[in-house]
Amino acid sequence: MGLLVDGQWRDHWYDTGKHQGEFVREAAQLRNWVTSDGSPGPSGEGGFAAESGRYHLYISLACPWAHRTLIFRSLKGLQDSIDISIVSPFMREHGWSFNTEEGSSGDRLSRCDYLYQIYLRNRSDYSGRVTVPVLWDKQRQCIVNNESSEIIRMLNSAFDHLTGNAEDFYPQDLRGDIDATNHVVYETVNNGVYRAGFATSQEAYECAYESLFNTLEQLEQRLQNNRYLAGDRITEADWRLFTTLIRFDAVYHGHFKCNKQRLADYKNLWGFTRELFQWPGVAETVDFFHIKHHYYGSHLHINPTGIVPKGPELDYAAPHGRR
Ligand SMILES: N[C@@H](CCC(=O)N[C@@H](CS)C(=O)NCC(=O)O)C(=O)O
Image (cartoon, rainbow, N blue to C red; front, side, top):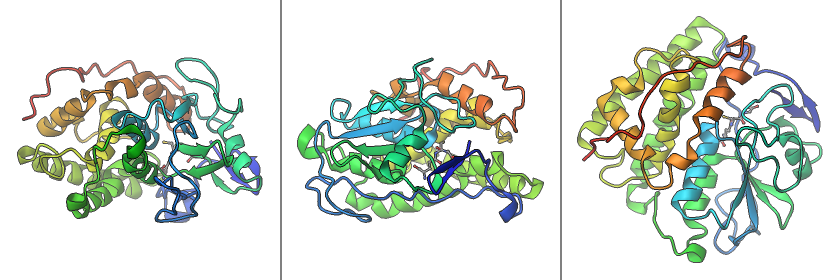
C-alpha cells in the first residue's frame, strides 16, 4: 500500500496522525468525462467521445468503489464496448498489482505489473494515491477519470446511443433525492466503514461506528415502506449502497469492527441486499474470494496473520421477499 510522489512509488500506509487518528480519504484527481459527443463534462476537458472499444476499465473485484462501475457496465449492457482488467486482490508493498491468479486478469491492455505504472503512463511525475477504478482512453493514451461516482454517471448515459439501452439510474425528477441520499450514505456508510476500520484512535473509531449504525437504522426504516431508496424505482443511490452492504457481514462486521449488528439482522436491508444481488447480471460481479482475501490479506497491520475467516455462511440467493 502506498502512493506516488513526483513519479516515484513510496510504500506508505495512510497518515491518520494528521487528523487525531481519523482516516480521511483523498479526493480523486483525474476528472475528465466521456460524453456522447466528446463535449466537455462537468469537470476536466473535452475530447472523450463515447465509442465502442475505445475505453478500458481497471478494477478490483474487492473494492466497493470499483464494484459500482462493474455493476453499471453490466446494467447498461456495456460488456462488449468497454473491456476490463482485474487486479490481484492482494494490495501490498507495490499497491495494486497484476497477475492472472484466482480470477485476476493481469493487465490485458499494457501488460504492466503494477497499477501505479498505468498512472505513470498518464503522467510521469504523478503524485497521489493509486486507486481503482481507473477509466483509460486507448486512443489518447491517458486516464479519463479515476472517480467511481463520476464513471457510473458516464456509463449511465454517454453510451446510450450506441447500445440502445436507455435505462436511467439517475432520472431528472429524482436527482435531488438521490444526491441527498448519496451524500449521507457516502459519509457514514460507504466511507464510514473505512473510517471505522482505519481509525487509529478509539474516539475516531467510535464516532464512525455511531454514525454508521445511525444511518443503517434510518435506511432500515426507509426501506420498510419504500421498495428502493428513492421510492419505487431503482436508482444509482441503491447501487452505491449495495456495494457496501454486500461486503458488510463478510468483511466490515469483523475486520473493520462494525459489529453492532450484522446486516442479516436488519430485515429490510438484508432483503434489499439480496434483491439487488439477484438483479440480472449483478451476482456475476460479486466475488467473495477477492473481497475477503483483499481485506484480510492486505491490511496486515489490522490482521497481522493474514488469516481469512471462513464464514459467515449467508445465502444471498435466498428469496428476498421484497414487494
Ligand atoms: N474516490 C475514489 C476512491 C477509490 C478508492 O479509494 N479505491 C481504493 C480501493 S477500495 C484504493 O484503490 N485504494 C488504494 C489507496 O488508497 O492507496 C472512487 O470512488 O473512485
